Length: 419
Ligand code: UD1
Image 1: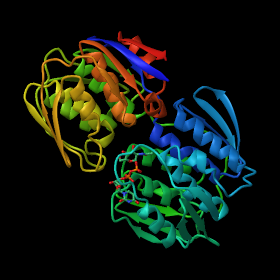
Image 2: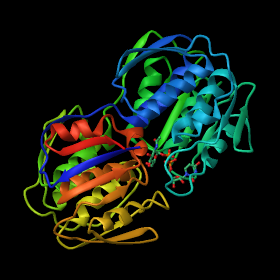
Image 3: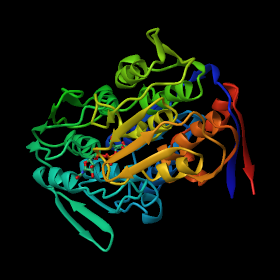
């Protein structure tokens, strides 16, 4: 078993390069199944979710060549299986994108229910509703989803809930459908725009991604022979911005899109931190105890739920009492028990958590309860006095490439230790 051992407190200082976005990459890889040929994807984060995605694609018949640790070439010419292995799909949430992509490419797919972080109920009814409106027959039996269609036909689809996954999945399924699909009440996250940009580069006709109405005119085929670079990761960038504030440091983030970071920037300024937008880089620093703030997580462009635990670390150290309202997931305050072991004063009740700020956190053994909670605990450990041991690293490695190396370059005293 591995753990991270962090000795703090350390004000983080220096430059960090942000990787490509996990949540875009885990959708773009299945999207390559729609191409009758080869394409190269660059700026891929080198994380476990990507490695598992590649294994699933290979199982379906794709040929993958690693050009370097952040770039692959995928040849989807000979897709020859319509069964995705359940032991792989059950290991992460985004395996549900195999459904949309394979319905579009093969008109048929059998896939295990997706796994992923336990953030509360994670239904996929909106995905299924979308596929059915496109003409697919979808059944769920014994933990397996079976989807089949003769030829998908474009349709208007109103999403009852703003869902990132359902928006992308319906986009994937409708790219090669007959006619026009209109997704109403679509999600607007940067990775949705990125998946649409990728598909359009390959010959799709998708308009309006990034707004709440997306129009997809079906095309006959997608051509390959193109190279696409994944958008920088909004959530990884936000994690480092909040780490700068929590540790009262000074970090410049390179390879980020500052427009995607506006909701985080606004909150950092509100609590007394400093942000300098340099276009393609952003500097964040803080030289005093942050002030209190209330946060409500919302779909983009609201404050992202995936940065809620990292913001929780900052507010646990703030001067005054803050409230975080989690409006996306039912069970995203599990990390507060771990922070309380480090001396935080947090009370979580249903959708709200009350953060009575303390002057200092103190090191303790703590357990990642999900991917972003794990990253938050690393930030807490760097800000805390003494030694913090962080367990359950499998969660963190799903979404952050070499997290300890990046923090070490910023001055943190952090080691990965095998027990
Ligand atoms: C994606 C992200 C995840 C992030 C979340 C919200 C990926 C791989 N994961 O997850 O990191 O926390 O967006 O920004 O991109 N819902 C339904 N029915 C559905 C689908 C969703 O009720 O069919 C509900 C969910 O329970 C949740 C809300 O809609 O309350 C948003 O979920 P969704 O945007 O779909 O999240 P994911 O795509 O799973």
